[in-house]
Amino acid sequence: MLYQIHEWQRAFLGPLSHFAQASARMLNDTSSPFAQMPGVQRMAAGYELAHRLGKDYEKPEFGIHVATAHEHEIAVIERVALAKPFCQLKRFKRFSDDQSTIEKMKNDPVVLVVAPLSGHHATLLRDTVRTLLRDHKVYITDWVDARMVPAAAGPFGLDDYVAYIEEFIRHIGASALHVISVCQPTVPVLAAVSLMAARGEVTPRSLTMMGGPIDPRRSPTSVDNLATNQPLSWFKGNVTHTVPSNYPGRGREVYPGFLQHAGFIAMNPGRHLSSHWDFYQDLLRGDLDDAESHRKFYDEYNAVLDMPAEFYLDTIEKVFQQFLLPRGLWDVAGERVNPAAIRRSALLTIEGELDDISGLGQTEAAHDLCSSIPAKRRAHKVIEGAGHYGIFSGRRWRETVYPQVRDFIRQFDAAPADTRGAAKVSRGRKTR
Image (cartoon, rainbow, N blue to C red):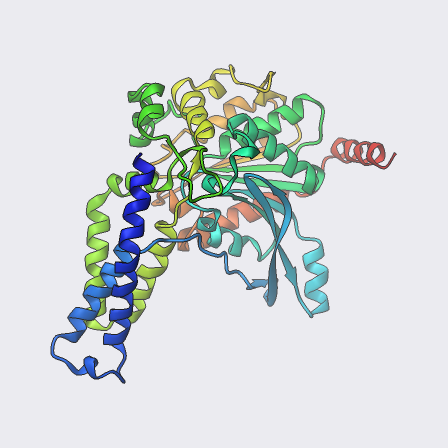
């Protein structure tokens, strides 16, 4: 009943939130007689704060329509390259009317950004995508809110996630592809590429893994401790619930977004309380720039999605409790995951010095597992002063991390001779 109770609460707060929003706008409108009342600014600020605390946060748009590539402004159109029940593979297609820019963009590396399915929408990587568009052709996995997926589509577990990644890589074309995985998907991405390599398939030219739990036994964080301190039955009984009847996915078992959001807030409630108080003070002072920054951040941070219960429980059990990947004991659909099978793909791992979600060493563990990749084709970077989000978003990402990612991709953008040969054989078989 918890999900249904949440829906009743949302239905109750909706009209109050809209009333608070309308009141704030009315009191802030200089043409309104109410705007001249004593203390009106304080009332308006209080109404807007109440509106933002009670409103329903929908999935934001990527909103990337213009970018800079090769020192020229270009147009960007977001397209769905492949639609699956639980995910849309999206491409950000670049356009220019400058012939020299067009020629340069044609030769840019192709990148697949694998976004986390861990509460927030893929739009959390908006800054990642916008920056990559400078020098790359960019695709991203845009995961679908599980409450919007009809139950008839069936369950979606960790094995299905791995299968999706394999399908996306094949759809784009592995022989000319570079894969960047951020946080949670580092594990299924490594599994997908390992399985492809073991079968003799062409694998991507490079893998960039950022802040992910390849081996959560190293430098465990509070997130890791939560997963290990409770049995799997606790997670089944306390955090998975049934989608109510007012959504397309009615009857589906999920880890609801509102519970995930509560967990995010509980990790640092003081910081969020302080942020909302500062927002109220900014409104009183008329500091519109800081107030707008607060709105943009929480419009993204408060927009969460439901995760399929099967996927969530699989991740807890196989990644955080049993450590199957680093122990070499993980089977996906009957096939053993063996990262040592990867030989052609280059490997870059990136960690934040102050990451409190994936501790230092957890991502670096990929190098020990991918023992067949030559040392000259591997690199590991620790970004000083960076937390979890700083390695893929914000100034530190743009100025410190991105140049290293860009240069690594460029270094290995030329496919090895045997990879090209395998790609030709694969294409030949397909045409026949």
